[in-house]
Length: 163
Image (cartoon, rainbow, N blue to C red; front, top):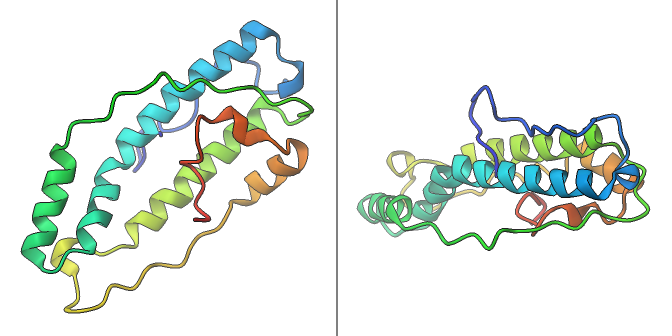
């Protein structure tokens, strides 16, 4: 959903006034925000793809199978995007900046979580310890209080690190 790992443009960018609350956006601003979210989400997914592929390999039976699983995952064709439209939530006095902060913090937490998994070369013989779940970022808890159905801004819950 966004480029990660130190890219200069890894943050969510929008032309919408970041001080404006979601429930005060015009229909054209809502449409623009959704377009920006979709674009950012595609970049984020692409940026995290190698780390998700590494995760797939971690559960293979051997180092060789791990390496093959990772390679197959990376070389797999991307699934077609359905254009993922978001629906601006109602009764949401959170600002665009608060949404932006939650999204960026969520990707940063997910990125760090995925980094904690071993590479194929680092695999221990029999056991892989799953890293501690980073939980929901504080910025998202704040957003959730101000905008209970903010998840509607996203096509799905890919940014949820609580699973």
